[in-house]
Image 1 (cartoon, rainbow, N blue to C red):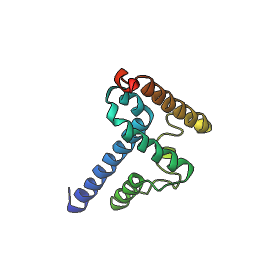
Image 2 (image 1 turned 180 degrees about the vertical axis):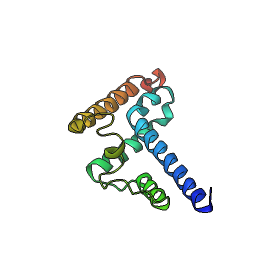
Image 3 (image 1 turned 45 degrees about the vertical axis):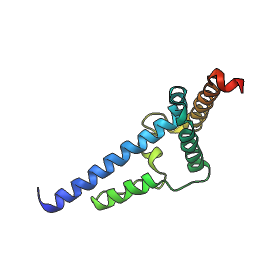
Image 4 (image 1 turned 90 degrees about the vertical axis):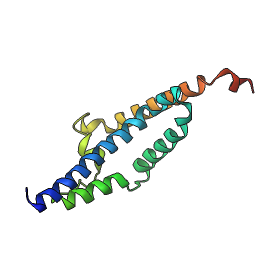
Length: 130
């Protein structure tokens, strides 16, 4: 393996790690509220993650993980992600049909809301007594 191939491999590792981090972020967005039932202090992190996710869909925030992946792809000589982004490239049409995007988004909202309702219903008795 030559120097150039070794450098490209490093960028591919960065790309793969970024994809894994992105998938973990999305997974935490969906189920993090349920994790907060056990680790109560994590609810603030989950609220922040959900706020970022909602903002990226509704407002169109630029995602730093997508930017990092695109940079690593460029550096390794691969094309960037399509302008539609990470989710449409890796998940839409792979995990669910393209025409089910709205349904999937509504299901994610329902899961998050259910987890938050459960979180507040599971508050310790001493907190409720105050």
